[in-house]
Amino acid sequence: MNQIDAAFCRYTLMVFGLCLSFFLPQKAFGTDRTISVISPEARVTSLVPVNTQSLDNQVITNFDSKMMPTQNGALPLQFQHALMIEEPPLRTLQSRPNPQFGSTHSGLSSIQLRGMPRHEIDSNQLKVMELLAKAGVGIARDFYSYDALRFIVQSRPEAYDFSWFDFTVQNAQRLGIEVIGRITLHSDPWAAGMPQDWKSYAAYVKTVLTRYAGKIRYWQPIKEPEPGPRNRPVDDAGLMPSDVVDVFKGFKQIAAKCDPHARLYFPGTGPPFQFAQYNVDQYLNKIFSLGGTNNIDILGVDAYIKDAKEVIQNRRSLLKQYHSPNIPIWVAQIGAPSAPPIHNFRFQGGGSEQAQCDFVVRAFAESFHAGAQKVFWGEFLDKSKLGQQRNGQNPFDSTGLIEVGTWRLKPAYFTYRLLAAALYGFKDVHKDAGGVYTFTFDDCGPVHLVLLGEQ
Image (cartoon, rainbow, N blue to C red; front, side):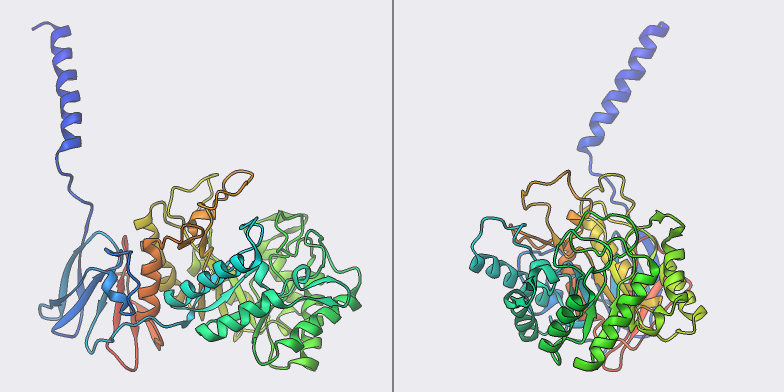
């Protein structure tokens, strides 16, 4: 056989092998682990659902779950996705709003559903809220057209329309969801910087707080205020650190007179930025150095890009530096897409529907272990199927768990739902040397979360 014939044979065998590989069953990627447990048996649940069609009140029915015997305090496992291991006594895992599980971007806007009459938009928003409640969401923020945004409730001086936000508050109360109210600085949705007429702004804040006193505990007077232009009307763009501190002071002064129980929630900044002399850390440092912590009741952190543990530890250290170590920290927004990310946006996980399920587990386990009091999944609504005109697809569209329009519940919706039920009322969480997160309770045995990739 000459060299040409030999080369041709090698090439033919290679092509045949590649073709054959498409038809032979592939060995699934898996992980072998042994978990330490105390009980003689435990319930093991794979946290990617096998059924996404039913919304039974028993949330575990959507998952492959079985009792397994342990071997001298050890539970050998082989798995492809994150696992939940429950030791007896077991809970009956039922759907109920969990106050530590939140949602970000929890509402619709009339623009997203352009052309629909008001009653039909209301019907869609009610559907969203009912699905939030069934997911176990206990606290929600950013309701867009259904919020207390100044350009929604105050179309002109002394003219208020609270019908949109009343709809949110009334239905949220009925469903057991706590609402974080959203206040904005301007009646013009695209305006930036501080209000030109502080007296008019103060009157708007007073009117809103008075109306919802006793109904809304947490208020968000500023969102992503960092200097420079932003492309969304719900942001408070172009504020220097001294401006932010002034807004905080003004809000607390007004609240002291009309609703002393109101709490100021500052969700922090948006994505990393560099403007003039400030990046994210320098910007927050300056706000705190000017006395910002004197008026902040809860601080939020953005963990879309940075690791949740890293950013929580950073903010906790900063609060200690300014003698405010007891201010609670919430993860204001964390998420991962169910599709490959676009625009090279660097999420911490996701990329497929199964990988999104795994990241839901990681997001809540790591955030709670790092000391977050509440964790908000964002964006909770998947807008990728709306079919609306956009200037290029938004990288956050597929981070949602509910497809707006089709109303399909994505697999990660059920993962979120099961965790909200299983972790309800946990009193402590620790992580062992093997990377297993163990949550303990007063009314049931411990719950262990085993993350994919942890060793």
